[in-house]
Amino acid sequence: MDLTDIQDPSFLKDLDQRQLKALAQQIREFLIDHVSKTGGHLSSNLGVVELTIALHKVFDSPQDKIFFDVGHQCYTHKILTGRANRFDSLRQYEGLSGFEKRTESEHDVWEAGHSSTSLSAALGMAVARDLNHEQYHIVPVIGDGALGGGMALEALNQIGSEQRNIIIIFNDNNMSISENVGVLTQNFAKLRASKPYNTFKNDLKTALNRNNVGQAVLSGLQNMKDAVKKGVIDTGVFGEFGLEYLGPVDGHDIKSLIQILNVAKSHQGPVVVHVLTKKGKGYSYCEEDKEGVWHGVGPFNPATGKTLSSTPTGYLSWSSVISETLIRLAKENKDIVAVTPAMITGSKLEKFFAVYPERSFDCGIAEEHAATFCAGLAISGKRPFISLYSSFLQRCYDQINHDICRMDLPVVIGIDRAGLVGEDGDTHHGVFDIAILRSLPNLILAQPKDAVEAQQLMAAAFAQSHPMALRYPRGTALYNELPQAEPIPIGSWSIVNEEPDHCCTVVTYGPDVDKVVSKVLTNSLPVKVVNARFFKPLDEAMLMQLAEEGKPVIVYETDMLAGGLSSAILEWAADHQADLTIRRVGIGDTYVPQGSLNKIRRLEGIDILSLFDVIKEYCGS
Ligand SMILES: Cc1ncc(C[n+]2csc(CCOP(=O)(O)OP(=O)(O)O)c2C)c(N)n1
Ligand SMILES: CC(=O)[C@@H](O)[C@H](O)COP(=O)(O)O
Ligand SMILES: [Mg+2]
Image 1 (spheres, rainbow, N blue to C red):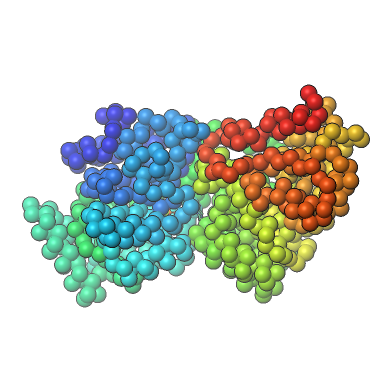
Image 2: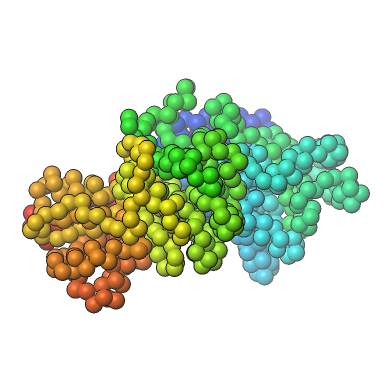
């Protein structure tokens, strides 16, 4: 069949096992082919092809609510709900989202991008359904990584006591982005290997194979409950939470999946279906990947698995610049330890973990815990470095406030993926951190303009004794190793382009500093450019100087205007009754969509050309 002919999942009801299997194969080939051109979350999607087919065969979407935790594994769901024809535009501006999007389809009943929200959402939906006296199934699909997240465990706690009808699909591929961590994974491993239950499951299968499926389901469930009571079946952590447990089932065997989902469907109360899948199933490069490099990929050659883009010579990713510097600092300072909430690969901490295994900690998807864990380390004399994607840092705002800043503990926070990230879209843009962190007492907040400053700011961060956060974007920077980086004085800005008779001053930060300088020089515009590398504390002497010069000041930010650098400068001007004419360029009161950085920066009016339109107002053409 042509996948682009699919309108909705109802066609699955008429397909037999053989046809369903063929469909799975076709979808897998489609995914590899399309993701190799657009990039995307390949491995997780390859792992849930059969599971998603079985879910849409057994349940009736959109009446029944099928949705995916994080949402990065919903591509088959998109194909089965009539969106195959839009895959050429995956993750592009105005194209198909890489996550579920309610505006895209009535079958997308929940949106995410951040992990571990699905179970709370499911319980909310279930309570609303019951209060409305409605009848439908609520079917969240959650991975073993996401299930270890605090929110998911908090939700299980309430789901167990509410006892509403929810069918939790536990997609256990024994992987987070890279290898999963924590004691829960051991509990899952025990369940996976649970022999007595596997025997029991076969009994259930035999019962289900009889003609009277309804009766088989009921007697199967009764047998199962008896077996649980007798302690024959290990229900693991789920039993402890008061949930019915079904499984484990082979997540690539559509027949077994359909059988067990039918059992779950007729169950009263919350039930977990434990599905074993292989991350990257059907594509050897993905199947063999333990580091998670195939979790999210850019365009690649499907035959060789080789990525089509390459880092230019001499450049390193910003994450690598920071982690290389951390390794050097850690050599001198034995108290430095590195902490990550499940982002070793994205944060480029693999090397640090290899060089200093006993000083490296992967906490799992647990930003809140990871931040307070760092506070505990710091209060006991260690110098923790925690790497957090800006967007995921939002999860642990309170811990940064209550546990780190309030006690003025010297934790160094690497804010990775700061600013717009591009194709992951609104859930992942890291544009709020300046605004939310700037109000926290004791915190120092900075951003380097280049890799040299990154090394100097890292040195500064570990040379002082307050919490300090250092933000850096997705992408690369020209890298020259500084064997001995001199710490930059805290709160100091620098003038990077001085003009004796300037028409205005541009105050900006990060990699845009040098872009603005090169543009004004190329266009021979008399514009002074200031590198505002500290958002907190501000360089008050420099601000006073700008006020005395009396020239217009354009604050050019590539993050949210509200609460950002320009807000900080306006506050300072008001507090000091300084006469500053401020013009602001930045992101307005909106969630920025997905798309290439060039495209969305243009759209939001924060690209260099937009800045130049503003400059020209002051400097003529
Ligand atoms: C709060 C938060 N932290 C980190 C991430 C980054 N992240 C995306 S997917 C993922 C792994 C999820 O693992 P799992 O739930 O097992 O799904 P799988 O990819 O194995 O299918 C992580 C850490 C995120 N999306 N949200
Ligand atoms: C789904 C998710 O949250 C991550 O996989 C994210 O897409 C990673 O993005 P990077 O490519 O910036 O590491
Ligand atoms: Mg997983």
